[in-house]
Image 1 (tube, rainbow, N blue to C red):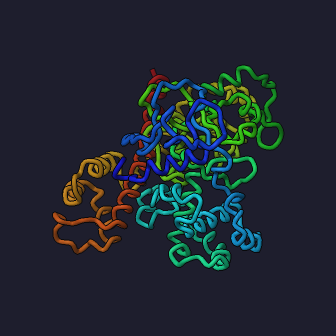
Image 2 (image 1 turned 90 degrees about the vertical axis):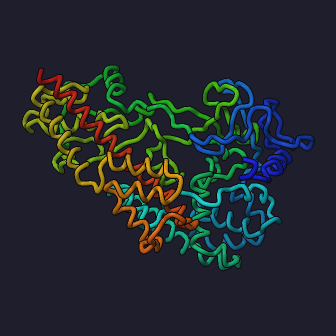
Image 3 (image 1 turned 180 degrees about the horizontal axis):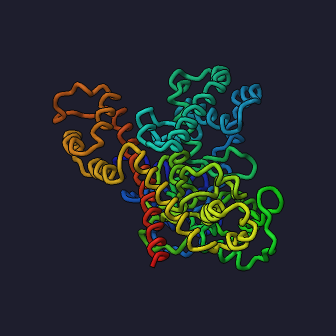
Length: 497
């Protein structure tokens, strides 16, 4: 930590001068007598297996206890940056830009000021690079393998390029230095805004929060979208006997009703009475534990898209598989609700849709009350959909370039190889060697005869890091599909006995 951030102490001292504090004593006044804003509740620590640099507890913390306050004056927002008249006048001449684009320009503008920026100590501690999908290259994009993931990546890349071009004239007006005018600089700033901003009620672009953005992510618990939870909800809901499908009355769980039953931990937010961003412990922490923050509910693909990381265990992950077109017309469930949970179980909506689809159309009205209460239509119906689901999942796995086992070997090689030469030797033994050769070709290393002394360039190292993320993502995707097949087989075994 000391080698990675030699100026950490000066940064924390600067933060204390702005009134940022982890003290339990409520105050909004600058702490001129303190050399650090941390030490009462938190400290900057390194957690190599769970997010890297983060905030750790320096004492036992109670759930709901305030652990950090960041005064409004310390937040970096469009409002505070645009106190600079030159910037304000230029932005006002480009009103067509989104609030996020303007905040990106504001960040680059402050970076261009160097040491004269009031946020310079904070800006110097921002990451030099990110692994959000918009920063993936073509090789890393294709390494995701799944059409949906590649499409999301392509969309993110095109969006970043388009927004950069739209902001050209504003950056020209501000006479940006060449290094801050490039697409590379833009996508870095956009990734900073995407991955580090916090919500504020007065600006949809959000704010950059010194020290507050050091918290690593913790996924919220599973919201009541699973089969068991919906069964519980539906059991407490009055469902009429008459259910008309395809155009008349569709008896479904109301979205507002689901929201009223769902729960999501509130870890922090801007508080008007304190005029500060306040953070609270989301659970009880022991001294030395990493203190985490929930940003919201995300799948692993969404975490990659917006934050540049994924979770080894994500209770909110989802996998979508191709479904028969007729299935969508047989039910009123939205496409977004027809998925497989992280543990391989079909969602309530997917099971309901399959049960209706597998029922002759002239019988669907009579079995609707069973379907929407989460019950099976019949043994034969359940056997049919489990066989269909298992067969479809198996086809998905077979159509992907590499298998779950091959991806596991490749990821192990990435994790355990001490150098690139060892990595090359290991990957020669698995089917992913073609992918490895594509990596070499991408980085002009295809004709290298010996990898013994090869030192990867910075660009190649970043590409390999993102390649690893892509392999981790697709491996988890395949594991969910595999677990769904196992789930179907287990149900089938119980039904045929």
